Image 1 (cartoon, rainbow, N blue to C red):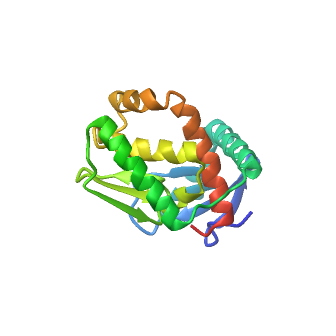
Image 2: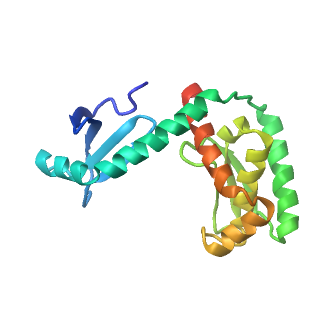
Amino acid sequence: MLNAYPSQKKRELLNIKYKLKVARRRVRGVTLKVDYNGLLVIAPRRLPDEEIRKIIRENQNWIRKTTLRVHMIMMKANALRLKRRSEENFEAISLRLISGYSKELGVSAKEVKFRNMRTRWGSCGANGRITLSKRAAFLPDNLLKFVVYHEVCHLKHFNHSKEFWQIVSKRFPEYKELRQVLFSYDAKIRSVTST
């Protein structure tokens, strides 16, 4: 596995390997992140190592559980087969979906953009602009439809409130499962691209 945090010191405590990143900006506390690259600890510059070790000990159950979940996602990702749509095809399908879903929900997107987004499948701003990640071109039809519908629903509710998920669930009652599948696709896409 590639080391996504090459400049950080590798450490181990309680058989938990982690990388320590000393924050170059002001941070108030310690952040623990578990992703495809392992555990990353982001800490303020002057925090003693013993305090960091104490935080890891206090959170070891969460770290182990989250690491296991990420491992399961990676196992599922390894079994996936990716097929990328052409950029033109991806954009045409997405625009057609946005148009149809907008009519269905009685909303209108003011603008649609396609960008390289590393951490999101899409976004919807309060200004009515929907942005879709070009990485979504790798998604199978059902997941692309889900991502697009999710963003169009934000034109009604600019949050992830109960009302928002009620709208999503009318078309995608299995939305919780689809969100989990998206994690696996994210891992697979990251493993074959640099974005």
